Length: 153
Image (cartoon, rainbow, N blue to C red):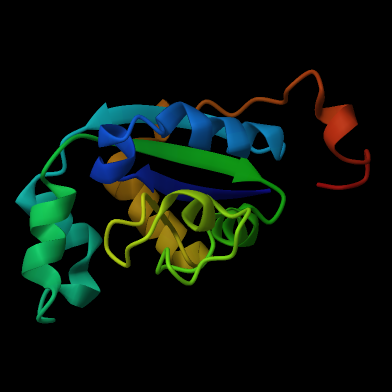
């Protein structure tokens, strides 16, 4: 099992797509083990996007991510990091394949609705920015036998 961070960004919240995107993750058999709505502060933005702070586009990125509430989620499942990123599609919505979240709902590089961790190391770092360990509610759905074989863990 892997756990990854997913952020439903301000454009996702503003466009009222939160339920649609959560629905897609749940239909895939992923568990949402923590979720909260919050406003990203400039300080949290700098921590989250630390590798981009010195880049020319960072100012616009910070303005965007702090402009409205986001929904932060800890998502768990088999190969969750890869699975979630494939579900999102290419970063640029104009290049994302139809059927992916960005391919179906985004037409922008920056306003691309969703962020997801890109590696186990990033997931561990990013999850700690948004959730305390005691906020993660791991569980096994009663339908798990319909999602995967008993020896898949």
